[in-house]
Length: 235
Image (cartoon, rainbow, N blue to C red; front, top):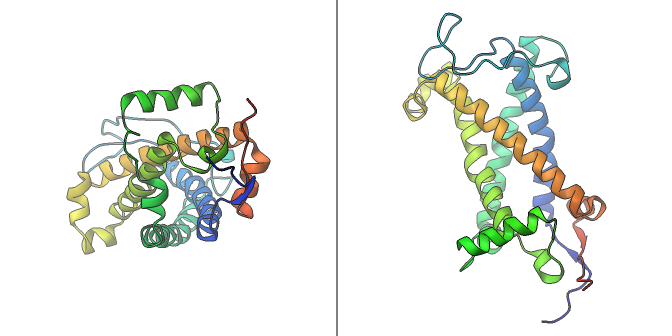
């Protein structure tokens, strides 16, 4: 195998722009969403839910450290949320279209022959658990766990968050009543919205942990300038 240039362009500019725009918008959406949630911190299934109905989850109110603004203000939280939401939705749509048109999905995210075999998946899990990160040319390719998580987040979790958010809007219920049938009612949509948002938080925390363990300077540089220093095999 020919040697790999130690310094390469790993992420194209559309990926880098969307990554940081997405990070800022998701911070606003998550914190303002918790501010909205604090107005009624209970979750239900079905069409209806109120104080005297049985909730499936009552996590309690979130502290000011986790909400936007950092005090209880339902109106202001809604303003932040509804301002960031359409920007986030259109940014995601643009990124998805670019990913498909540029070949990013087929080239970088599509599973290759043999990658989904149990032995291969298990080996990838073991390598991550032992903090054995790929080197050389392998470091420039997404592994099976990265592919599965990125595809799941970009093409499943984020669209579900957007659609369930639309389902909670009375105006959208009038325009697209099929959303209520799709998610089983407004309260079910609210619960799914909450679950998907926290799945995103878990992904974010794991993502940050992997960046720190893999080398934060190199990883951050690649997402800011695109330049990535390929780790070399020292064995």
